[in-house]
Image 1 (cartoon, rainbow, N blue to C red):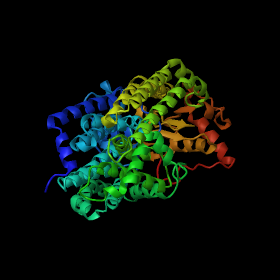
Image 2: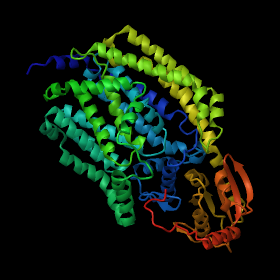
Image 3: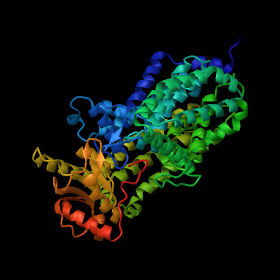
Length: 622
C-alpha cells in the first residue's frame, strides 16, 4: 500500500532515539526545577496535607502499611498509594536531619507525578512528530511546560495530597491508551496497569474518567469497534483490578463496615450525589476553573476546542489520524468536565486531571495546517499576550488590592507581602511575557507552530522561581510558623515531664490545625469554639479511647495543654479558667489548663442545658 502524504511527512520528521533522549532530559531538568525547587523549605499547609503526611509517617513507623491512620484514628478517605509513597520517604535513614519539617517526603509524590506527566506528554509528541510539524522537540517542550505552568499544577504539584498523583497516573494511562490505539494495539496492557495505579491513588473515579474518554473518542472517530480491538478493555480492566482490588479487599476484610461506609459511602457516593463539607458550587463552576487553570494561554485552549468542534467530521476515518491526539485531548477534557459538573460536591482540584489534556489542546492549536486559519491562530496568540498584559497590570497595581485581604489567621500578610516586593517581581515576569508575546505575534511566523510558545513560557518559568516559591515561603512564615512554634513548645513541655508519669493531654480549640498533631507527634483533641466544644474537651480528655491513646483521669494528670486562638479565648465560656500562659504564637495561645476548673465549667454548662456531641457517629473525623 503506498504511503499517504501524512505518512511520508511523519517519516521525514521522525526523531532518532538519541534526539528523543535529549529532549526528555531537557524536560526532566525543567520539571525538577519547577516542581522540586525548595520543595521541603516550608512547612505543611493546614488543613489537609498534614493528614496525608501524618498517615504516611505512621505507616513508616508502625509497619502497618494497610490502614492509613492519623491522630490515633483510621483515615479511610483515600486509597493507600499516596501514603505508601510518602512512607517510603519517611523510612529513609536520617530523615529528620535532612528533612526537618517533614515536607520533602510528603510532597515528593506530587512533584514526581507532575514530572512524570511532563515526560509522558513530551515523549508522546516526539514519538508522533506530526504533532510538532517540523519542530517536535520544541513542541514537546512547549506542551510539557503548558501543563507544568498551569496555575493549578503549580500549586498542587507542591502540595502533599493525592490530587497530583491521580493527575499523573491517569495522564500516563490515557496517553498510553492513545499511543496503543495508534500503534494498532501493541503493548496494550501498560495502560491498564497504570490505570490500576490511578485507582490506588484516588479510587474508582479513574476508571470512570477513562471510560468516558474512550467512549467519546470512539464515537467521534466513528470507530468504536477498532478502538475496542486495539485496547482490549475486558482484559485491561482485569489487569486494573489485579493491581488495585487486593488492597480494597484486604481493607474491607480487616476494617469492615466503617471502611465501606466512609470510603465508598461518604467519599465517593455521597460526594457525587450530595454536597459534602459545604462545597456547594453552581453547575457552571468548572467553566471559570477551566479558564483560570489555562492562564495565560486560555485563548489557545478555546481555539483548540473550537478546532476540534469544527473538524470533528473530518476525523471519522480510522486511517486519518494526523489530528487524533488533539481530538483525544478534547474528549479527555470533556470527560472531566461532564463527570465533575454532574457531581454535587465541586472543588477546584477536581479539574486537575484535565490539565494535561488542556496542555495538548493549547500547544497543538498552533499547528499550521491548510485547514486552519492562520489569521485566527494569530489573533488567539495575540489575545494570550494581551491577557498576560492584563495580569501584569493587576500585579503592578497590587498596592490597591492587597490591603483588602482580610484573613484572621494571617493578619500581617498584606503588610509583609507589599514590603517583600515579591508581587512586583511577578509583575515584571508577566510584563516581559506580554512583550515577548506581542513581538512573536507581530512576527507572524506560524510555520514555527507551538514552538513560539517557548518565548512566553520562559518568563513564566522565572515567575515560579523568583516570585511564587518565595511567596509560598512568606505565607508559611505568617500562617504556619506560629503553629509549629506552639508544637515545639508542647514537645519541650513533654520532655520536661518525669518519665513514669503520663504526658499532659493536648487539645486545640477554636480552629483545627492538623499540623499541630504532625509536629508534636502527639494525639491532639480538636474541638470548635462553641459551648458544646468546651464540654466535649473536658469529657474527651478524660474518657475518649483511640488506638495507642486514651483519656487520662484528672487524678493522674490534673493539667492539660490547650492551644487556643485569640477569638475563641475571648468567648465568655472560655474566660475565667485562670490558665497558665506558656506562650503566644501569632493568633494562638498555649495554655496549661487546670482540668478541675475545666470540669467545673463543663458541669456548669451542662446544668444550663449544654450537651456534648463528640460521641455522635460521623463518617470522617477530619
